[in-house]
Length: 160
Image 1 (cartoon, helix red, strand yellow):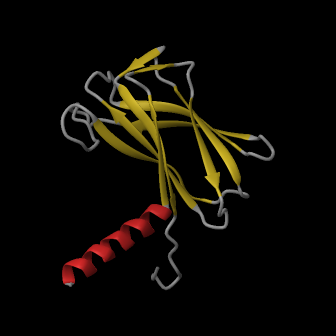
Image 2: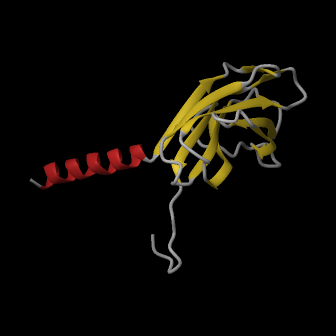
């Protein structure tokens, strides 16, 4: 009986977590052309709840740098206004050791883009990401993704 109860509790916890988090991945296929933007469409149905937007980068040992630079455009679905950010993220320690997690050659690293971001209204927002490194064809990036999660709110007395 306890095994069945534990199983249902596990399913409940996983299903609750899945509703608050969404990850969309694009395969870059180890060669990211400088002119090719990676595009992500985010359907925001609850703009009253702030979101955390987190980039997911999967790189391998062919990646030649310790950092990666992005030019990111967030496009409003109604006004078509673009909010542009230039970002720099560190992928490796000074000694060359990758910071990401994973076994073998491919490492996955999460980078904060916007925390507690409040979308202005419901809609389908587009985020486009271009690599801004020195190479026209950047090797060593396998996948790029974006993770959207509902930000956890904290009350003034410190409880959730």
